Length: 255
Image (cartoon, rainbow, N blue to C red; front, side):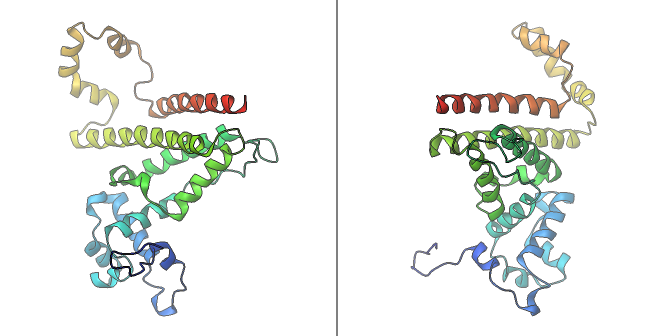
């Protein structure tokens, strides 16, 4: 239990949520507040989420909402936890890295987690705008992390290496998807609806740089690439590169 500087015990948000709720208070709960906040963020962007706006949507006074959510940190955590429910649970993995049916190993578990996380971030682009989404300690995020760590357990890796491998996959997903979301937002701001629109918009800068002759390999890419606008394919190839690295760790751990 965390304590404030004056040694007065501070009850965590999640401990408060697990306490029974009286019938009189079921219409306004932290979960309901999070649902409304997510709806606003999905349609209007993260900047539109304020306690006053949430209270208006709920038809209550702002102070009523503050009695359930103490501030932005609580609100962000609740929002992240709520959408983390969209991460499909992997099958239970044994120490040998496979399910009872023998179908799912550590690689499949981590891949499913990565793909599901990307899809969740694309459905909720505001996740890429949060100050520190990777460090939000919530029950559902920890449950997702637990599933990935279980898949790596028993493969000869020490606990530090297991966590480093999982965090590397998470960092790739976060970075790659954040770049994808940022590009989509930039295109929207510029009024560009396609990759061709974007390339035309950036043509003056790109043409000058390519004509300097300093970037021949990049120039070859711009002329020959067939998947410039296939973000899903690019993500998948990058993910396999990361998983190949984890596979090397596993092989050395088993040696």
